[in-house]
Image (cartoon, rainbow, N blue to C red; front, side, top):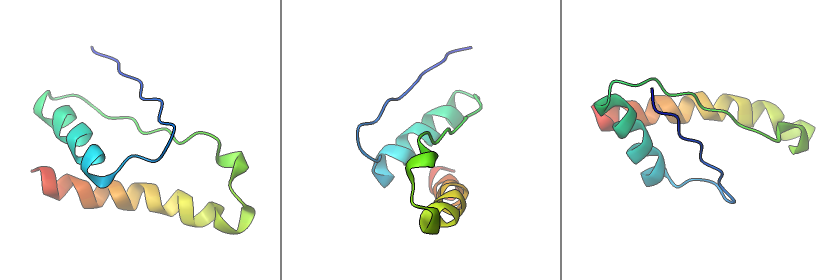
Length: 65
């Protein structure tokens, strides 16, 4: 069971995300997305960030299939 950890100094691009999801699907692997440092996000933006992550994943998966 391979384990890869990506430490991004900046946000991934949409193309980067598509490559990662495509690889996980092709290899029959699960994908865990962790967003760290949410405590540093301004309170008024917190809900938007929490909603945006699953929405972005839902946008990417059909592009990979």
